[in-house]
Image 1 (cartoon, rainbow, N blue to C red):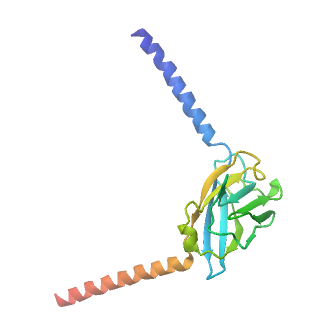
Image 2 (image 1 turned 90 degrees about the vertical axis):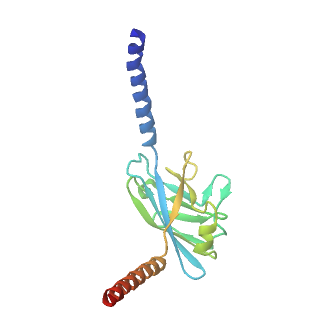
Image 3 (image 1 turned 135 degrees about the vertical axis):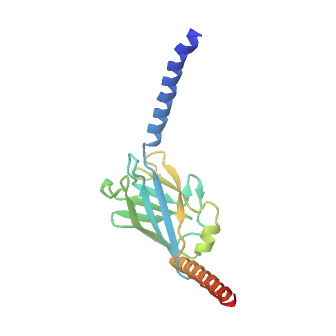
Length: 187
C-alpha cells in the first residue's frame, strides 16, 4: 500500500510533464490558415488571404498553395498569379508558389496578409468540387526551408451568393408574416 502512494506523485509529475511538453510543442512554429474567394464569369479570378496564428512562434515566409509533396490539387493550371508587395507568385503545374522576398515581408504571428491571387479557366464550382483543392504547405522562410506545415485554405462564398441567400431568407420571412396577418384577419 505504501508503494502505491509513493508512485502517485511520480505518475502525476510524469503526466504533467508530458502534458506541458505536448502543449509547448503545439505552440511552436507557424500556424497557417487561409481563405479564398472566386469571382468572374471566365476567366475566373481568385483572391487569397493567408494568416499565421496568434500563438505561433515563427512567421510564414512562403506558401505553396494547392500542393503538398508529390500532389497538385487545382483542377487545371492557372493562367497567371499575383502577390502583394514583397512577395513573388509563380504558377507551378496545378498550384501556385508564393514566396516573401525577405523576412521583412513575412506573415508574422497573429497577422494576416491579403493580395495573393491567380486567374484560371476553371470556375469556383469546379474548384470546390475538386478533392483537396485547398490543401497547401507553408514554410517559415523560403520553400523547403523546413518541414513545412500542411493546412487547408477555406473557400468563402462569393458576395453575390450571400446576397441571394439573404434575399431568400427575407422573402420567406415576409411570406410567413403575410400568412400570419391573413390568419389573424380571418379569425
